[in-house]
Length: 394
Image 1 (cartoon, helix red, strand yellow):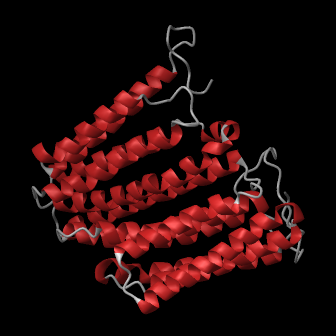
Image 2: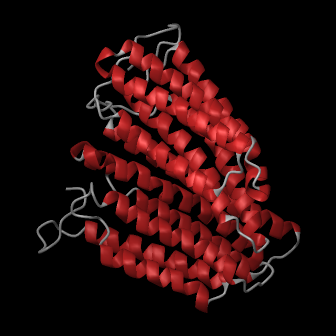
Image 3: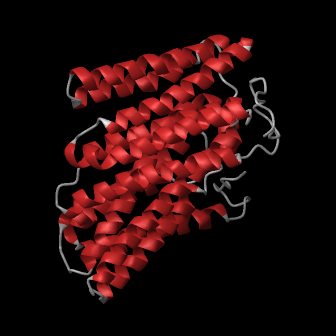
């Protein structure tokens, strides 16, 4: 749909699911940039906890859920109803403001379990999204019930979040309950009629967020390099772990984009919930990899043997690899990566910190990721006529 910057309002109707050449809009790319700030904040705070020997993993996941859920909800809405008119842009800007407020509250939330600012930013984002859903319901009669269900569900759950914070302490069980209700919202809202999300557009949007998270990991690792250089702690271990970290991130990027998700989603739209929701663990793992690498690079200069640092890299990489296979298994047939290869690799990676120092763990984990990528590439490029071999892109 062409942009119309001079139009205040274009009727919001469902976009075709087979719209040709559908790509992310400049507004969506700008929207993603605000999440760079939020992800950087949560990654930095998690890294500080790892360095202190007290990684706040639960707090990290709680805050990251708020970031991911707000991003994901707008992404799927935009795939169905992006008009790019003035009103749409202003409501999107309101959500971007909410992201920045949320990002400002991340340090207090993770370090001190002070969640006052994070839900406030979340509330701002959700109000903007609810307004878009109500607008869609008003202007698209065919999917009015679906859109109104989305909008009302968002507002009701926001009231629950605010009341929970005002009346009680944000206990873990309450957070899990509210998360379950949030995840159930789209399932309930889409029962009258499904929205017209575009499979290739969604796949591209998720891929762009993966790139953002990998970029944050590079930034996190560079912070560790900067601190080590400032302290004058140059050593062969420091150089080795920095290089291995970069190779690891490149291998994780390569593995993700081996999967033609857009084609698979177009043929198996019913698998979209497992695919879309499963990415929470994949995204969180990538963010955690950045935090682990930041500490590993810095600690390599000090020649520490902390098991915690080793696990801070190994666990998120293992989660990433396992989740990558799980989310793509329903939509990729045959699977690009075999279950046996993934399971064996995950077991090896999780055992490494028990027998190796942090520097060796990063190098070994990087080697495992590269080996997986190499095996998959070789398998994918074997002749299609070979017995028992099918190209993952066929």
